[in-house]
Length: 157
Image 1 (tube, one colour):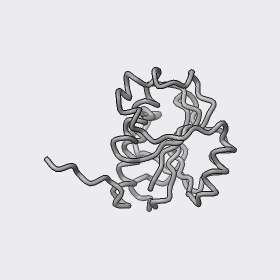
Image 2: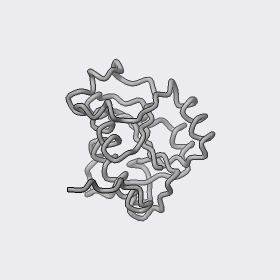
Image 3: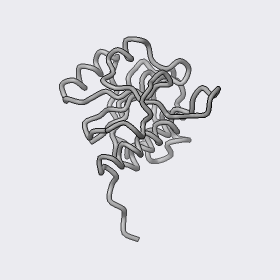
């Protein structure tokens, strides 16, 4: 199953929103530390609400520790980047992908770009820099789940 990874997140509200997204869609989240805030469920409560307790997430003390776990699991690293050339709808996602999102303040360092197996971009109007990280996560994750048949079954009404 596809995973999301947050590289050294800066804003706890975005992290809470992404944990909620993961809980609702059954997608695990990797949090690559250090985070730019004290890591606690209380920090995520407003955006993540009670969904944070239902989220499956793993904290990694560094990018190197994350990479060790990712490679051992045989997962591909797909970086969402404003520097990428491949529009995400044109990319062929795999159930073994981990979608990584950079820091809200500055993205990811060159070492993370170099480690990525693929890089995708969200097409936007010229002159605009980027979307909110949680919005970007939802957009690209939605396409990846659509392509791989990974959406959870709809609950009966």
